[in-house]
Amino acid sequence: MKYLKVVALVMALLVVQACSKQKVTYENKKAFLDTLSKDTFGFFWETADSVSAQIPDRWPTKSFSSIAATGFGLTSYIIGVEKGFVTRQEAANRVLKTLLFLKSLPQGEQAVDIAGHKGFFYHFIDMRTGMRFQQVELSTIDTALLMAGILSCQSYFDGTNQIENSIREIADFLYQRVEWDWALNGEKTLSMGWHPEKGFIEARWKGYNEAMLLYVLALGSPTHTIEKESWDAWTSTYQWANYFNQEHINFGPLFGHQYSHMYIDFRGIQDAYAKSKNIDYFENSKRATYANYAYCVVNPADYAGYGKYQWGLTACDGPGNQNKTNPNIAFMGYGARGAAQYYVVDDGTLAPTAAGGSIPFAPEICIPALEKMKENLGEKVYKQYGFIDAFNLSIEYNDGTKGWFDVDYLGIDQGPIIIQAANFENELVWNVMKKNKCIKNGLLKAGFTGGWLTNTK
Image 1: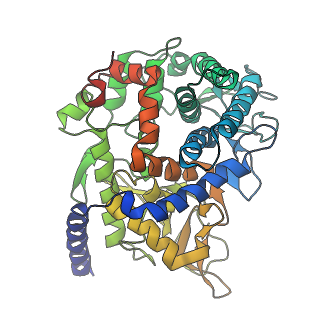
Image 2: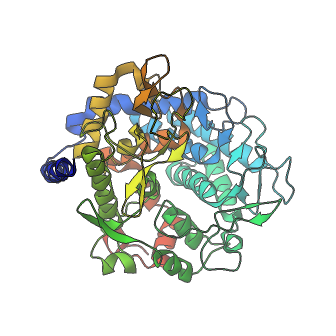
Image 3: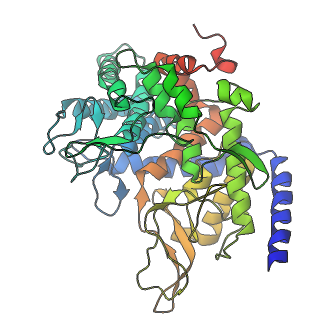
């Protein structure tokens, strides 16, 4: 068995080497990507609440709203305009409705009948009222993802009419109100969140993960900024390692290599850490994607269905452990699956968003995987709004049926698919965000130089 695994590893590395030489462009995948984008756009456009315009955490299962999903939804509306799915006027009206609702929500220290505090929002809020869901945390990262979506609309809707003027003004208000410096709580790195019942969460944003965008937004704030020493403290906790022949800053679930890159074009720009490794963060995400791919091709735990066209470990839904006959597998529910040098969490559950969110980094392995998953598994994985969140082919149920397929879409997993497909097509979201002074100022303050930042004033 050990010999077979060594052979599988060698074969996986050869496949990686061969795939990396292939050229995949938007033009030769246009039909598939356009359909995928349109279907995924439908999730954000059609499931938003009719009153609040907030996006559900999941659908069709009834749920609260995820503020990060709302941020992704705001950005998807820009893509919808550019792709011709909706008119600019329709999108502007929806964006303004969303922002006006967010602005109207109460902020304060109390635990109930509240939506946020210090400019931050609670991770989950009621779809209709916008009030805090149960006792969830005031989330720094989810607020950052919401603000990224808000700022993308601020930069895109640059017209002189009243609606677009209002979008920009409210976006300024919401972003400048966030007290990023408060979230440091006296330390150099940012806290993951806060509860009115017990104060700041002990866990802080360290290591390498999706919080790169959080730090850039905090550094770029004109009202409640943090200092460069926070960026240096953040990068000092990176874990550099060689995993499946890919030297990179390791983080297991692929979403951590995708979320910040949805909004920031890291190609050719470097901070001090990246320079020390002779790499940029875009290349880092490419290597992480290939490592995730190689792990799944080798398939150390022999899960069903893994291969070069079915792969991808990231945070996603899962089948859980009820009514399964598999005796030796602890199936997870929702969880952060992933593969890296210091983190391997794998229960046989694959998420299409893992490949979808990495399209710009490695289109030669990501797009064929998405195509084949749709072709091979059909309506089990691809329905009204594109890919369902996740599936697991290793499941065996007590009634003899095999295979688990999610019933839900998750907003935070739909976002990477449509946004990264747009970046791959024509760098749409990257180019919109390059116009935003807060993003540029945050990158410059963190010490980034080169590339598109060279001529930044």
